[in-house]
Length: 501
Ligand code: ZN
Image 1 (cartoon, rainbow, N blue to C red):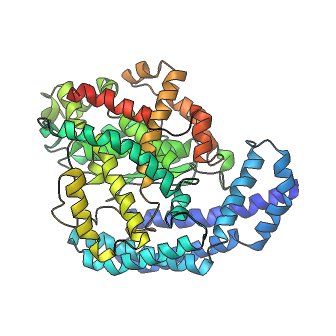
Image 2 (cartoon, protein in one colour; image 1 turned 180 degrees about the vertical axis):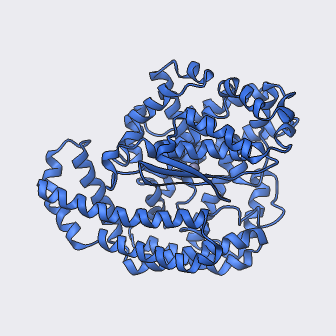
């Protein structure tokens, strides 16, 4: 069996090399590529995507997986070999249902759509992307229909990013959360708004960068195995556990923009840098689901990066970088400013309390579009109406409305957003478990030390890569299935104190 397993690993390495090469091109497209390179780049990425897909879905892989079935059964479930075979079989069965020609068409289309969105958003021009988005919806439906037997047409698409989740189960968790969130948001936003003017004077970008680089090094990000660049929409991407890159968006007049997007992306990057290097080039490389991934970005961004303990250590350092802007601002005023809760229109700028309302409405729109209960041409009006209803505020234009997120302009409609809120919920459950296991963590955070926390996360979550599904990992790490209580407790404790709830 060793022979078959080695052949399988060699094939997976080749597939991974093609996918990593394509990812480098995608990173370059978002960071340094000149605009006129777009058409050629779309072609290049489509070719690499097609080759990787053909190699992975080749019948010989299916034969190898069949031969390895008895060996897999003889190994412990959580052994590397059994996990590799299991994860590969799951992906193989998923990908063999989608023809390579369809995937090539899909990649080509989304590459064009992304380029159009980059121009259409600043131009506030929804009409320019509307026909592309209509085609994306049609292709998303076709993609789902390669997996017949679903309960809801969104289920196969949700399965791509959050394996094992369904529209109905996600909807149930979301309903539980919404029941607690809506009164909390109403209570807070009926109070006198917090003054956050201290975040909105002028902050030179090089100093912002110098500050957050210090912090993410303290978190444990390894710049020998990664780098940071600037893009309009921050993201993290990796080509191996030894090459993990993240990007940040800066605003001169908003200190929180770059700092918290850096903490967020660093959370994703720490996860990727912490995966067992043995898994590089295999189906076990990389984090396990979008929800688990997001739980790590949210943990570092919010539970650490927006906590009072964190700033007790770092606020004097931040004041040193910006003496004219923050010298006279107290730590308490700053802490309130970075945790200001308000009704807002931009998801990525939203505070912890309202953020999930932004996600839930996008999730609902994805279901409605896929079901055929909402047409793309009616999306901007529906978007604005729902914002008015849920958040009490209407976007002034499509640029800060339906055009604000890259997701539907660079990938399928369906399964794109639920991971963010699943991640928030899971972050609290994981953090609660970490502190129970290592009660020193809160004290160390007050001193700017993260070794105990990072080691615990590495040993319990990061090291495993994609060995376990999200539900398996959650059960293993926390001893329970995903539930909203730790997250609601976290929000109630923190914002109860801030807003006297
Ligand atoms: Zn994220």
